[in-house]
Amino acid sequence: MDIVLTINGREHRLGVDVRTTLLDVLRERLGLTGSKKGCDQGQCGACTVLMDGQRVLGCFTLAAAAQGAAITTIEGLAGDGAPLHPMQQAFLDHDAYQCGYCTPGQIMSAIACVTEGHARTEDEIREFMSGNLCRCAAYPKIVAAVAQAKLAMGHA
Amino acid sequence: MRTFGYDHVHGVPDALRAGTDPGAHYFAGGTVLLDLMKLDVMQPGALVNIGDLRGQLGAVALDGDGLHLGALARMAEVADHPAVAQHYPVLAQALHSAASPQLRNMASLAGTVLQRTRCSYFRDTSWDACNKRSPGSGCAAIGGVNRHLAVLGVSDHCIAHYPGDFATALVALGTTVDLQGEDGTRSLPLEELHRLPGDTPHVETTLRPGELITAFHVPAAPWMRRSLYLKVRDRESYAFALASAAVALDLQAGTVRGARIGLGGVAAKPWRSHAAEAALVGRRFDEAAAEAAAAEAFRNAVVHEETGFKPELGRRTLVRALLDAAALEV
Ligand SMILES: Cc1cc2nc3c(=O)[nH]c(=O)nc-3n(C[C@H](O)[C@H](O)[C@H](O)COP(=O)(O)OP(=O)(O)OC[C@H]3O[C@@H](n4cnc5c(N)ncnc54)[C@H](O)[C@@H]3O)c2cc1C
Ligand code: SF4
Ligand code: FES
Ligand code: FES
Image (tube, rainbow over all chains, first blue to last red; front, side, top):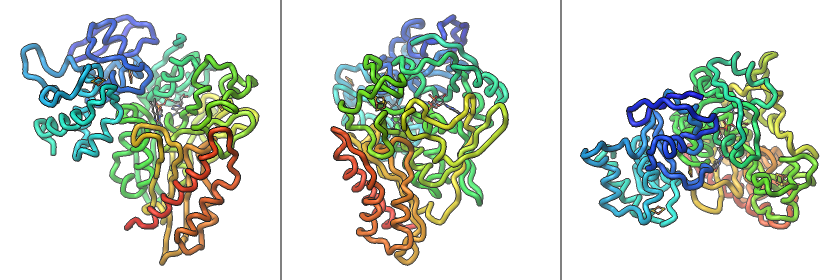
């Protein structure tokens, strides 16, 4: 089927099999390999992207059903040569990863966690980041990074 | 994943027409469907995407009769709705404790109510024996790994648990569900939506083919403010319940005037314990009263190889939930 997706402000027209997920379109068709496939089963959060500003799972979204929404991936946060998004910078500052595989999903999820208003305390950050697993267990540094970035993003 | 037809509908009449086709399934958040389709446990012939009906069937409203929830409202928005948190805390807490923020942004209320068991044998098609997945094939969980499964409402044919949090709270509160089919509309108590497994565990609900859930109505009652949801699980967040309790109490001068009790993670369907409620009403509330109610709740529990701990865990969960609810300042 023919679909139109709006990803990081750009329209993409493509023909896909009806079974194709948004995650597979990003990675296999558009070369946007920042979003990761951890489980493909809705359990790990590595595929988290924003749809109309809300965090969702790319592996559980049919590409056909993602039409009409503004999709943002990790690649869309900062342009070439532009400064990093405060959340990206905070992850760097705090070394909030080891292997880095979960990191794009963590960062997309963390941005939404802040904009939703669910990052008021460290406990709340832990609870509302629990949909993103990190096999390297960088959790304490991820919490610190989110706490730093929320201030830079203008949230209390 | 097997291929399927795909229809994106824009109004209820179109949805009902497409939804009546044999093999068609409504597709709301899709998080149950894609999960089980990837595992080849479900093989819908067609998906009818009802996401666009959210404008008509997604409202949350509070009035003198109670709380009215559109079936397509998303879990996250209802969990964060101030009126829900203030007047029906048990519902907000059940939603917040379920799944992950990403899943709650995608998932609809109807979808979460209709979610399917997490029984590992049901989810893994390399096991032949599962009466729910292939009727008449047997039950691999009986005599197998069944720690997560149910002890209330089970049968010799299936001991699967109903895993959802939200329906457990809804059913406790005496919620009514609105349904729409091609022949018209009807309402029924949510308690009558899910069926016990009996000898047909593959038939999970009383929905008629193509029937669409349009709304849930939670009545107004004096016990709603003093309500909470307590969920016990293997890890603190983002895990299904091993045992949970949804409780609502009307306490007047230390005496229980009304009680509503739901149990999750331990039963074959969203479970309201009328027996536990009856044991409390009219009694002076104290720890002994809570324990007596919990004993009633699990009186008919049936345990298997690995579920021996569940009645005790369930009782303690309910006792703690009742004590916590009684201690709330409302
Ligand atoms: C990793 C993971 C962890 C989870 N943890 C929890 C948890 O801790 N607690 C919990 O409660 N849940 C949990 N869930 C389940 C989650 O709540 C459900 O996946 C979700 O709520 C389903 O909603 P949906 O809209 O995506 O459903 P869909 O997949 O769209 O639909 C589910 C079913 O309902 C039918 N349907 C949908 N809408 C209607 C309608 N209006 N009328 C008639 N039929 C309809 C569909 O045809 C389908 O058969 C978890 C899920 C995952 C993947
Ligand atoms: S408990 Fe039910 S779902 Fe699990 S294997 Fe047995 S029949 Fe299937
Ligand atoms: S890849 Fe989507 S949740 Fe794991
Ligand atoms: S940094 Fe390795 S999985 Fe998170």
